[in-house]
Image (cartoon, rainbow, N blue to C red; front, side, top):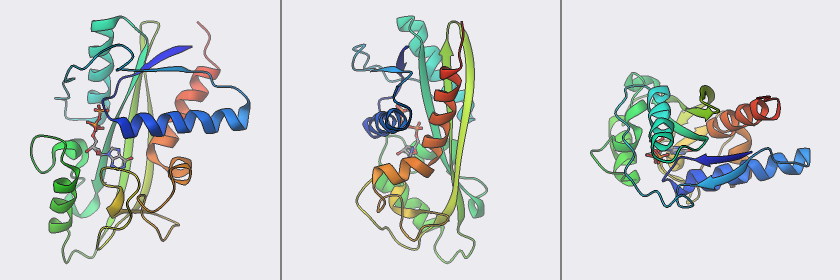
Length: 201
Ligand code: ITT
């Protein structure tokens, strides 16, 4: 099944490719022939003006479908910090202002969290799938804490300041395979893949 992943984020694309490869290693087959927005020659800035992750994920697939009439899926992800009332949440990409400056976003979180003892947080991903004219949502969550300082050089975005439960390393210190096996995106993607494996038109 040919599906476009509607993202301009190369790190997400890389992780999703890796998640699909891991699925193939375990199951001998991949249910998705993955295309990127580059394959469609789509370089448009896709609007994300909704106030929920699900709303934004749907907005991305609706945009791509309206332009290219292709089956597609999109991921909207937020870091939800308990002590900040769930922020940055849906505003994760532009927490420190317009643009996608991950370093500035992390610094803002670290400043706000200075001296805060409750460091509980979670990453949440909502994937919207548009297939044969219907839309479906898949969610993945990973719980953890915001660290006291940045650690690690792998991953992207907020990874250097997020330590998942059960590990003493941040997502930026873990290798991509380990991150994907426990992450918000890994969980949502595996739900999507299971749905596609059992899908009948
Ligand atoms: P697309 O909309 O093109 O998919 P984006 O980077 O704008 O890409 P989001 O709207 O989902 O993605 O923004 C989420 C923000 O959270 C963004 O700043 C990312 O860097 C960050 N983020 C997303 N997934 C992450 C992950 O697995 N680890 C760390 N940070 C992540």
